[in-house]
Image 1 (cartoon, one colour):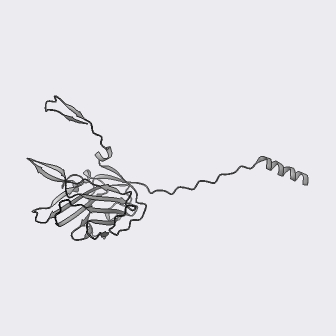
Image 2: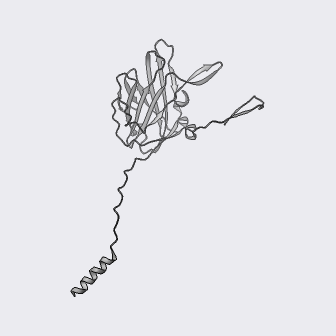
Image 3: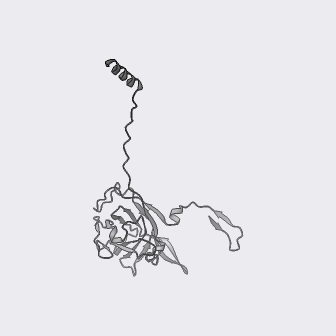
Length: 238
């Protein structure tokens, strides 16, 4: 519910807008990854069908005397999924500027709790590498144009073993050719937010899909007349 009017509260209009409470509170369900994802740089729709999608990245821009968030031309589409052993990510770098980038890096931040130090996964598009804090090797593959990267990281490397939920944020830093500085874009918050899990999104991992049990075979009750016929036959034999 939004109020619009002058500073003295006169001539106030009411604007109603429907919002998702989960999205407003940055809480999301992360479906359990039941099927195997092939880390081959090809984002297969069937493999990633149930993955959670992070979109709508913002950058800080000066408007008059103030700094505001605005939708960036350097967008990212980041798919996240998990099973009992690994965190999976498909990072798609989108560039609507049409300019060559001299550096372009996406970073995924995960934390086990609001008090934990975030673990970082850095996807370096220009270098064609993926690094995880602590020197843990990630399995990854870029496509031929290096616009998309698929990767998986052991949950143990991210301190997430046994966690039913974790905190997530994503950022991107791009320096275009001839630019004096990099453009930093954020999924949640700003440059300070990526160091503070309290403002990350809360992702709750779902349960594995259980195979449906086959229907139990119907139990046929004995016909009492058959039992009587058998008893009569036995009596005749005596």
